[in-house]
Image (cartoon, rainbow, N blue to C red; front, top):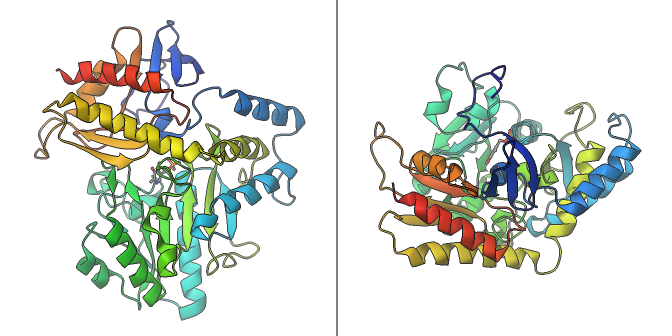
Amino acid sequence: MSTVFMNTYHRLPVTFAKGDGAWLTDINGKKYLDFSSGIAVNCLGHNYPPLVKAISEQAAKYNHVCNYFSSDVSEAFAEKLVAACSGAAMKKVFLCNSGAEANEGACKIARKYSLLKYGPGRHKIVTLRGSFHGRTITTLSATGQDALHKDFGPFTEGFVHVPAGDMDALERALDPKTTAGFLIEPIQGESGIWPLDGEYGRSAAKLCAGRDILLMFDEIQAGLGRTGTFLACEAYDLQSLGLNPDLVTLAKGLCGGIPGAAVLAGEKTMDVFQTGDHGSTFGANPLAAAAGLVVLDTVNRSGFLKDISRKGEKFVSIIKGWKDPKVKEIRGRGLILGIDIADDASDDAPGKAWPVLEKAVSAVNPGLLLLTAGKNTIRLLPPYIIKDEEIEMGLEILKGCLIL
Ligand SMILES: *Cc1c(COP(=O)(O)O)cnc(C)c1O
């Protein structure tokens, strides 16, 4: 493996050379079944033929125009994306490139919304302990995990973290004199696949609405159909309370493997950004938009989301059928699942999930690609196009790897 990369990742000694559907092949010809989708990015698997066609055709037309002008394909993508988010009453979109960048944009909108309406001093954004919102200084400040904070201060001022599920703490933190927004993941991804309780979500939404504090969903990992609804926050059925999120961020799978991200805004926030307030050189990139159109067209196909739910249930029922005492709990919805394989251990105990991941990768042909989340949770984010027999085959490999 090349040694010129900075040492930011715990990389396994596997170098991929090609992909096809839910499969990857390394430079030695060994095949791997992919339960990771490159962390929820390759939602349509590898080299999905309509995606390859759309990218190739777009590459042969033009790849970039600056945002002084518009492009046919990015207009089509933006229109379709906003329509796909109608379940959360989203009205307008800002297109950018990564999850962190999308969350930065959402935080800027929240601050300006509050400043215009209430004047200075009401810029706080509340997030949850265990959350993950990105790696830039500001999105790290939003991220409620102390371990990621060491070494990088000073942080962006104005972020407050509260424990997930604690309504009293939230009520105290959401001070309407100082707070602009409440930013949450409907399912906390990086820290262990922790779905936020429905009642908590609904109560938080009511609290935010009553205090005119913006409700901001970070759906970068859980959105885009992964939970079986286009946006994961649709599960809260906020519309039955007459409520909607104010901002939603998407990234990871948005363009099926090409970098792309979005900040979506509802009625209240859609016109906060005005000319000159924000921008991104690569935002609304035509190649990304062409890829994103294929993702949206595929996910919006009749029955596609239902099938994601069905596949998720298949995963869960097979794992439960093992009756393996090492499986302590299965969390998640649709194709975002966490399997706890040890009870919560003390901080200095070695994690149990990583050795399973290593064992699965090195399983004799084929290997299996897994993810972890937290120390003892195996995280599954398989591509939406995974076949039933591939689910069965991959889980058979995983089962063998639990015997350590
Ligand atoms: C991955 C992730 C991010 C950061 O996205 P990047 O594209 O890596 O900047 C933010 N929030 C959540 C919930 C994520 O899963």
